[in-house]
Each structure stands twice: as C-alpha cells, then as structure tokens.
Length: 227
Length: 275
Image (tube, rainbow over all chains, first blue to last red; front, side, top):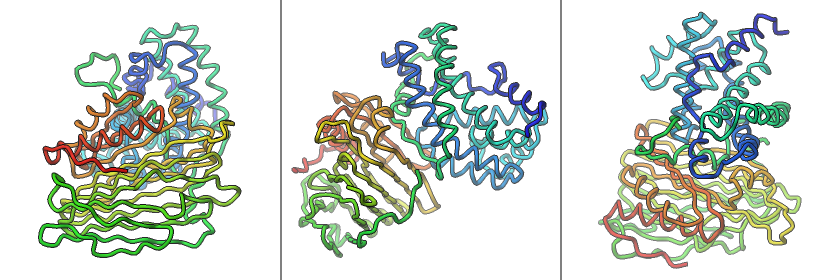
C-alpha cells in the first residue's frame, strides 16, 4: 500500500511546475498543427487516443516497468537504457526523451530522491556523455525510489505525457484552457483502458503519424517546441 | 500481444543466396531456393555501382499463407554489390484460423560490400497474420539500403482488417547492435495509427550517410506521401519513415527514394527495375 507521503510526492512530480523539461516538447503536435492536421479539440483527442497514448503504452511502458524492477541496480538500469537507445528509432523523440530523463535525474538528485544520485553517478562514470538516461527508464527508477507502486508510477508517467501534449496545444493556440480540461477528461478513458491491459512483453510501437511529424520540421522553421 | 519465436506449424523452408566479387564483378555463387522461393537469373545494368548484380525474388506459391514458415538468408562476401528486389508485392493471405505466416530474412553484408535489399511491400489481406523479421549484420565498411513496407487490403470491402502484424527490423555492426525497430499491431488499429493511410514503411540506410537527406527531399515531392527522416550519425544510420494513401503512392515513394539514394551514391540515376 502506497502511503500518503508517496502519493504526495507523485503529485509533486506530475505537477506542471515540476522542472522536468517536458514543456519544451510537443511530441510532433506542433508540426501537425502547422500542417493543418490538428485543428480542434476533437482532432487533439483523436491524436491522444490513436497515437500518443498507444505509443506510450507499447513503447515507454515496458521500459518503465523494467526500470522499476531494477531500480536498485544502476548497472541493470543502464543496460535497459541501452536497449531503449537502440529501439528509439525516431531521432527527435529519442532526443526529447533523453533531455527529459536528464532533467529528471538532475532535479531528483538535487532533492535527494532515493536512487537518483546513484544512477546519475553511474552514467557519468560508465556511459558516453550523451547517455543521460531515457525518460521511461528514469521514471521507473524514480517511481521505485519515491515508494510508489508500479501502477502509480505508470499513471504518473502517462499523465505527464498526455498533459504535456495537451498543454502544448494550448500554447499553440489550438485549444482554450477549458477545452483542454475536457480533452484531458475524455482521454482518461483511453488511459485507463490501456493501463488496465497487460503491458506488452517487449517494447515496440507503431505510431507513424506522430513519429513522422516529429521529424518533419526543418532547421529554418521558427518553432515554439523542440519537436 | 506476445511476440512468439516460433508460431508456425508449417514445414520450415529456408532459402540461401550468396554473392561474391570475382575480379570486380559480383556473381551469384551459391543458391538454395526450395519451393516457394524462385529467382531470376542475375542482371547487370549500366551505371550501377561497380560490379553490381541485380536479382529478382519470386514466389511460386502466390503469396504467404497462414502456416508458412519461410526463411531467406542473403550473404554478400567482401566487396560484392547486389540489388535484390521482388517481382511484385507479397500477398499475405487470410490465415483462416491457421497460426500465421512467418517470414525471416537475414542479411549478411561483409567488409566493403553493398546490398540494396528492396522488396515490394507486403499486402496484408483481411484476416492475415504475419510475423515479419529482417535482421542485418554488417561488417566494417559494409553498406546497406533496405526497405520494409506494408499496405492493407480489404478485398470484400467489408471493413475486416488483417488479424495481426508483428514486425521487426534489426541491424548490427561490427561492434554490436545498432538499431531495433519493432512493433506488434492488431489490424483494427492500423488506420488509427497511420491517420487513415493504408500504407506505411521505412527505408533504412546504413553506412550510406550521403543518402538520407536526398531521399527525404525527393520523397517529399510525391503526392499522397507523408515522410520524415531520422539520422543517427553516431551509428551511421538513416531511417526514412513514411505513410502513403494507397499502393500507387507507396510504390512511387519507394522508387523515388531509391533513385535519390543511388543518385547521391553514384552521381547517376539508376536504370529502372522493370516489374
């Protein structure tokens, strides 16, 4: 049974004010908005249900679960991180995942979340400089460190992704604040349904629309988000 | 959905092709092509990379069936160059209650060799089940351009999707694994994941850093195609991922990307592969 302190820590980490760095990424949404593929709250809801949530469930979730189970073993975490690296075949989404992982590790090491400093030190000592920890691996490790149960760690991580994309839609001017809350409420159905199913045995996702969108912006384009 | 290692009850069929460079010309030096595998004789085209042989793979069975267990190994010995393609798309038939087809392709590209492995897309018919695996092993200086694409087809127009697709593309270099792209998908989720496109796929270029951007630029001009390029300079790999509205657009995308890659590689547009 997760205690109240752990629940409070989860709420703290999932709060939009928590400096995870996730605010800098739109997961391809900015391109889809600019190309006219996402124009409304309905479009965003479909994108979340059809692409963003399934991609997290199929790809990030198994990695998070593996990391959660190996949270006490930095070397095992790094091996999972390396597998995540090899499977992250969408360059900008991979880069975003690493930057968020690095930010999470930095902040949690600073506030002494159990496991964060040990994994950060392990990466610095054993990994190439760019290997700063992928988001789901760091989230899984931190979830265990915060004393969450696995289900809560999953809920927190998926919620971060969904609220991040929805928040990006607001900042892109495609959604009002109230509409955003309606989208989040509706997306909860797909989140619950997905999390209620067994996690895939192996990580691997098929969400080509958002994956392609994340890669399409050229360096010359002025953008609000890094992907 | 589990990714089982051996799901087919059919008799395993294993084909093997070996290409070797002999005095600057690549020859098919070894072939084992049991039914349903069939091949043409090797061709040569002016303007191809030095010594390159072109070979068409064919099927004498009319596609992949629900209990097929097919394996194909293509080996290029040091310095060899080959373009391996198919005569047409591979139809993956309705499994009709059988466990599903397995197609396992292994590409072994040795020192300094160049392989273009560009099969036509798999056509996933209603009710079909496919476990498709492509794994490549590259030695130092090896180069690989490979395509992996699928399209869905519902011949009765009743909205019945394919049953499942388990797809895996992996590449390893001299120092170990370089990439693994893998997914498992129920047919009912295809159109949602692609945003309504009936076709999807990717072209992977390994050891060919000059080809990624030209392929992406060329394919961007193709109507009905939506594509994005990922480049991983640390592993010398580029992945051009695309979706397409229909088979015609998909076919054009594959040819256009290949021609752009070849143009950047040799400075000349390749001779069309007639099918």
